[in-house]
Length: 189
Image (cartoon, rainbow, N blue to C red):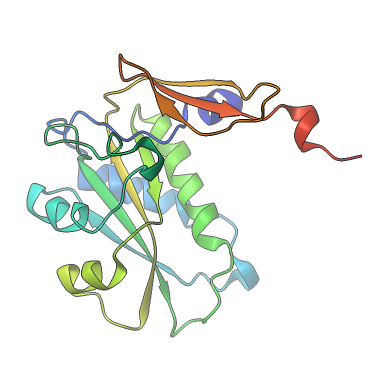
């Protein structure tokens, strides 16, 4: 069951924007992340939830999408996420967030897949612009933004091949191809 969730959990960049994601579901996703590992059990992560078109627009304008798709990666109107979760690190708890936000984000995305949603972790963020748009106090570091919604694209995992090319790409039908290195290539004896 976990393998199916992991394989279905792709970085979706096009969504059915008209299909809402409720605050209840966002709260359930974040609630599950509370149980994930945290360095020294400090639990320094805080979250901003967004599921309204107005707030989503304020977040969207500060994100960079799939630069390697050369202009083809940014969702158009109607294909934008229906919701976001902004992951913050509370510096009043600790100044070192380690990998906590990565663990939390993966937990959230796996739980989203279980609810037939898709998402994308975004780290290319205009942090100062987002801080101003959402009035985020300076005690919080903006670590990641998770875009969520009903996927409106097909993502296919394929072998990277002997050339070792791992750049993702879209074909003429906008199917998103994601090459992965082989198991033998990533294990070093």
